[in-house]
Length: 214
Length: 214
Image (cartoon, rainbow over all chains, first blue to last red; front, side, top):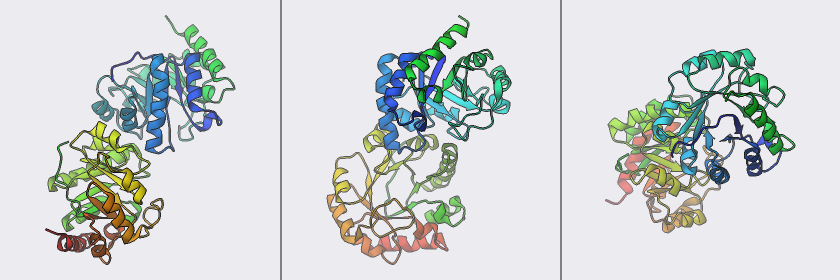
């Protein structure tokens, strides 16, 4: 792995049920065409073999477009597929262990919910935090209680690395999320379940590009 | 990893439900004291973080005794815990991918059920095959149909690497299993669920040592 450019502005996190039966690769391609700069492949039910094969297929779409691929939880799948890194939750491998295995150039993200987890993340060898859920979400039943905009701002204030907000973010609330200082928006349903994923991604991207300083 | 001695004679595969509530580390220690020469840690419900922590604890028991530890399915857990290798099934990572990640010194085993899978395993970069289930087993509901002693013999005849038999093996049927040419016995319940795991392991070990040539 060589360290890829990290564009956190619009970050697609995949979820198979949220696709409403559509093809994952097609939706990923549309999301990137619409402006997603980072993709996390999340699979909670696939076998390891299926997960590796899917990750390779997604990597094949993203690599020519220069968009990094992160794998949820599974360092082994990231290694086998040649992904750019891993996103871990609080029950997944510890960031220090991930870093020790994947090396300094891998991208590593960590989910935090609440100020205690944001504080505990200080000093962890991660490239960004995924903070949420900002709003209540049905996509990830185990995501914990909604933190709200104030909760997001508190987590961002504690963070030493860029923070991506996640949790029921839509084009309607995206500006208010970015106003809290988030480096970007991580979305699942807003793209995966959109009638037109490419247009949905482009709409979010315009909000990100318009609000972010610089 | 440096390539450890591979003693396939008596191979403990862990299964948390089969422990009947007893402590996994205690049962592993007893199994090794009784003569198990190889341990596979299998966890199908633990989080990645729990799995890594458990694997490190088991490795801490086995390392001073010179008994290699294999991790079921999860190459990432094996790397994080410093295990000696991985055992994969037909739905897990392909042996060639495992070998590419873990290198030439890792121990890699592959489960096969039936002649077609045994034939397909020829040429795979594995150190042994786990062939079964020899007899019907309740431990692993997805293990497939019992192959019987004749089925085991057929798989062994096709194999290019040593074959460990698995599937409801007990001290009552162990000799008949070894008579088919198996390099060893992989057991779950026969040790994990035994009233005295150490004695159960020692009984099986005596059968292995008595029957095996040399």
